[in-house]
Amino acid sequence: MSNNKTIHLVLFGIGKVGSTLINQINKAKSQLQQGQNLQLKIPIVANSKLAFYDKDGISNEWETDFQTFSVPYKIDEVIQFAKQHHISNLIAIDATASFEFTKHYLKLVENGFNIVSANKVANTLHSDFYHTFRNALKKHNKLFLYETNVGAGLPVIETVKNLYNSGEQIQKIRGVFSGSLSYIFNRFSEEDVSFSEVLVEASKQGLTEPDAREDLSGNDVARKLLILARELQIKTEFQDVKIESLVPKQLNSKTTINQFNNRIKELDNSFEKMREELPKKHVLRYVGELNVKQETLEVKLISEETNSAIGQLKGTDSVFEIFTESYGRHPLVIQGAGAGKEVTARGLLSDVIKLSGRLN
Image (cartoon, rainbow, N blue to C red; front, top):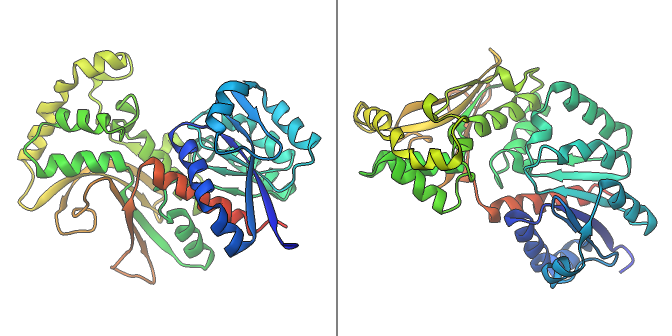
């Protein structure tokens, strides 16, 4: 078909999310072809050290090919390969959580790549980088989509952007921003289990980071709050976020992961006390709150009524309440799976398709 559009994806990060994304792309191929005349090809897949190149696009046997034919790479070699083979309509997908990889964003944009990212780092670095990068996108006429940075597959960033761009006065955004902490406090508030038991179970299910203190520190929630604040043009930095960490001082980063895991029961007493002090029909929730008027960002543990939007959460769901002038006392509520490789990969694919529609 003459009006067929081919988009070339270069995927960085082939762990849980990245490999799930490849499977989703393969399954969606014929539907995208028929419905949107869109063909997605992946000429390069890479992890932090090795890359596998196939100018015609990887096959369904890509994992075997990667093990057999991948080679050590530098970002310049990826750029060179794309130029050498005249690969157009390029989208780099960042399915890593790497601080190091975001250093390549500028170079990629300057060399013809658009970017779709699940990695929160670039949007939460110092505002100097934030603005430099956005100026580079404008200058080179490139796009950067990152819906999965907040709420995995939920359309939170897009909704906030659309409201803001239409002149709506957003007053406050609050909610449970973390699928793993949602699961932990949903179970802890409702079942007769110790906090450490729930935490171990969440870790076994792969819901927390390998070091659960990453989740309990509140830094992940703080990053998501910062991203939303910047969408609303609030000038703020990560260190401005007021964070109530759930990691006791004696178990902080000076102890190793193994030491922390061995002493995990030391968390139990303080959480047990909080649970006992809860009013009737209240549950504990770990929330992020952005007050737009006062420009304050806060991450904290609160007691919430069980019948509220935040109090009635189940499983690993996240929920975001967006309070605006038009909606008055009843916020716009976005709720759904806030974690997991399937929804995150689906969110990336959704961004790829959206971005593809804006390429020639």
